[in-house]
Image (tube, rainbow, N blue to C red; front, side, top):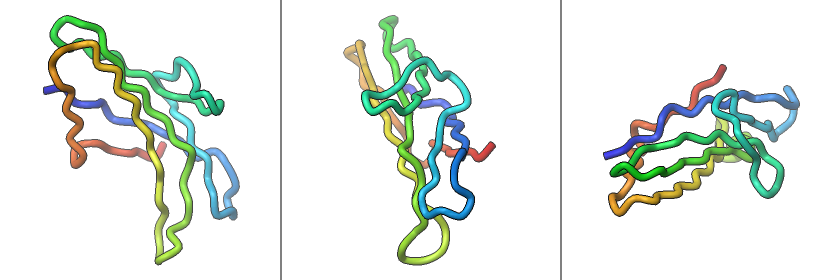
Length: 96
């Protein structure tokens, strides 16, 4: 079983706006097609190289109450015949 490491993202825009952009602060090695920075995590699965890329288009204020909704995207490239398991309750978004 392989788990994705903690994802560190930092808010960088508009203190008063409804939309806040986020960008990774570690493992940044590239960007998405739309130009957003992404974090890349290499995994060794059954001795074969695999990768998880993480990025976020940002956060929006929750229209149904207090708090925010943060969208985080993952791309998993698994070169192994073994499955990669992402355990949702063990994934964390940290504010730095």
